[in-house]
Length: 215
Image (cartoon, rainbow, N blue to C red; front, side, top):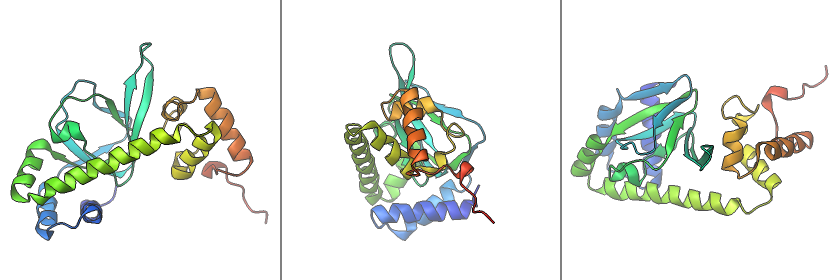
């Protein structure tokens, strides 16, 4: 895990990249959040469906996945949050109950802020409310882009996924095939078949099986 100061610096830089903020906001967040660390060494449920969402998370490393369950009880991955993402949606902004089953995968770490602390931020820095709204809009756009991408051919979906998340190879070490397959609206078997084809054609690279140059 990176140092607390480096994580806070990265988070505040990310906020300013969305919309430049009062430097005093960064100092306030540094003071409030420096002791609010999370680090999960194994997959951990963060929020069950129906739980009240009372924390926003900045992800320094790893992934947080949001899922639902179908009528058979099978889990389907709906959205993925990764490095440098802030997981804070309408449920957090309005302190609503979660519509999703939310998990942190093994190795996920970062910082959190509570709903009450965020209310204090809004009181002290009213412009932060616009920032929060812009962050929510950015994720809604990403959700729409993901939905549009599901209309592409299966092999294109798999290739784009592993080009975006190359660290998720070798398969199964961070996310299960079922989690990836449901995110891409594919069967487990189709995902494995298309992934093998892309690896064979060197369109994606498995770092665990990279070819060594002959001496």
